[in-house]
Image 1 (cartoon, rainbow, N blue to C red):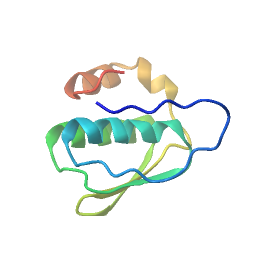
Image 2 (image 1 turned 90 degrees about the horizontal axis):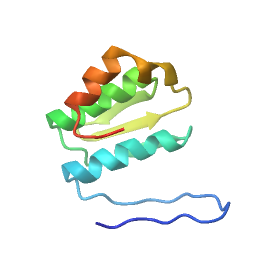
Image 3 (image 1 turned 60 degrees about the vertical axis):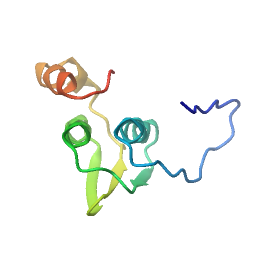
Image 4 (image 1 turned 135 degrees about the vertical axis):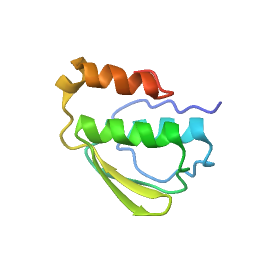
Length: 100
């Protein structure tokens, strides 16, 4: 599995091209939580695990907009950190194939 190592205080920007595999797209969607900027992701498979993670992001306060059949924008300007302490979060996180 590839990884990125970020050092220093340099601004990060650019594009990556995920393969559309479930495990890769789950990580890519979660990476949108790291910035308040709008992140657009294409080639998102329409499968249960991915859809559950997208719903979880919505409940966290991420603005999620479906742009097309397999494209979404994510903007995490105002994350509701308190949601992480709720029973609803625990239930939803159990359903996702992602560990927080």
